[in-house]
Image (tube, rainbow, N blue to C red; front, side, top):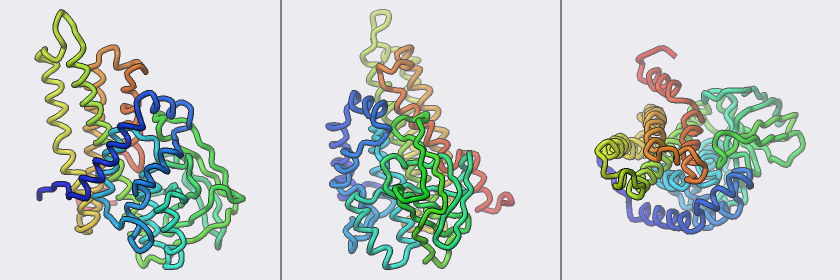
Length: 364
């Protein structure tokens, strides 16, 4: 199956990349990563005004009504810029969870706020996603208690949506009584994680799905596809930066791009990365249109991009030589972004195991 961007997707990609190129220079990105805690409210609102926050919100509720393939195009562009915005949770997993799990009244109330960027929802999984640390919460009526560590996109979030082991979900406002979110710096300074503790916090329960476990899996799979697309964008950025540097760096009276060994490294990176775009796009397309293949495709896309991303980040850094290990080049921002993507929502080993279980190769 062949894929090409539709005119609408091409315009989305161009407008997003154009904004990021203008407004998120390397110097600004370094400042945001070091001083803004990994979340830039001004950039988030600007992206919301471009329609990014409402990509997956139905049109009748003020959104664009697009699918996961469109979101993957946006995620790749954001990864290319290492943009410090809460896209995976707030713009993808959260609206998808509301679509699959919330009742009509909840959807009418929340969707317009999500589309406008007013409501920024971080998504936490209380188990089942391969995270490390504590993930133990319990719902007693409308009260939520427990703890989830390492939650993505809590910085700048107004709400946390916790998906329980049985597939139900509970939405809690961050500023409500009984919620303590401790944002902590991590490897990737553009996207800090947070430990969230609930102490009898008042919640809104999302339990309208007839298949809560299946709905939770679809939300998790969508997040995995977005992380794969983010890795794709970040890897492409590292490759482009390495090629550009090789064309400028002079050694022994010649630019290093003229050396055969350097050419081989660049060719190997390009060869490894090029097929990944089709893999990510198919996984996103399967989520939208081929539900029987969606879970396995998401697992394979997440696992494969994690491995290719590791190869790209290593070779691109080597092509920069000693400069690649300095903050001056900014290369470490993309290196660390790829590394966090690898382990979030399950590392490659877990994703492959889930795919094998789903295909009947091994027992769960």
